[in-house]
Length: 333
Image 1: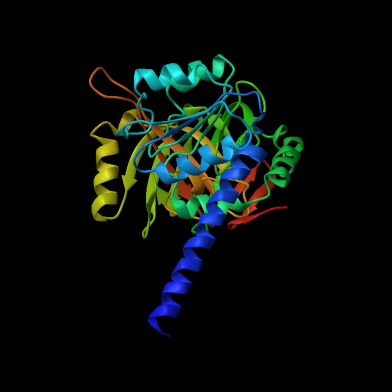
Image 2 (image 1 turned 30 degrees about the horizontal axis):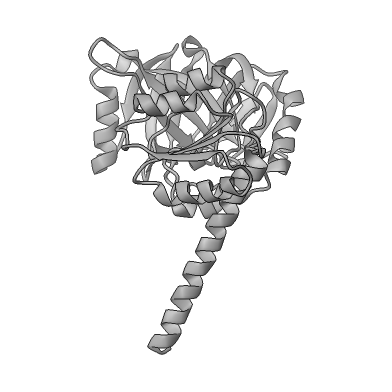
């Protein structure tokens, strides 16, 4: 192949990607957020996600002439508050899309904006490949229907058992109701979603958790080559066994931070998005059909912020009473 042919192929590839980015942005604006012509839309981005923010801005501008994009400095962790001017802007919108490196979902700014009626989509850690492939390419209307159809099964069950092929298992009980809102359709005032979407989850009664679980997918967006084994007794973390894998080991040790007995499992969920992939980002990993996840919380102290870590589990069996929701990583239709 000559140099000219390679250049032509390269240009065609770039053009194809640009078209995919535009199509995904249009899906977010028109299908997921269902932006209307009279509504204010705020796009929040940072230097890591500027390209996606620009695509969302352009797609939004095709629907409404009341679109604003703001680029803020990247925060340093999930849940860190945005700058005050950004938080103030969020409160004044009908629709907010936060395509940023770190999540704004668990911030006061997001909570206040939701209470004031903004419908909000957060896309923490979104990348170009994640935006145009995998979970973002699903049929969100079908996803919404499939998630809603789970209500008749889930309302009967409050106890969960996650087991693996080695015979180990973890038991827990949910607190409150199953959340079936993460379907990618965000069209009601005050509603919040992640994109890509597609999971069902519930808060967990921490004291109800006992047993052994092996995280074998990702730990807080870092791929796991050897399972991380966690032993829990009546909500208390007794032991965490992890391999000595450089950054992963450092991150786990930092999370434990000599206060292992204060860590609790606070959330359980499972994926419902058939197009989602294990990509090394919790944003998409949580949504993979046939996978499940747990969220561990290290509570705040006078000197430290609250820290959360998400562990993705694949190839497991998830039982709700006598009903197997997932069997060896295969979702039961």
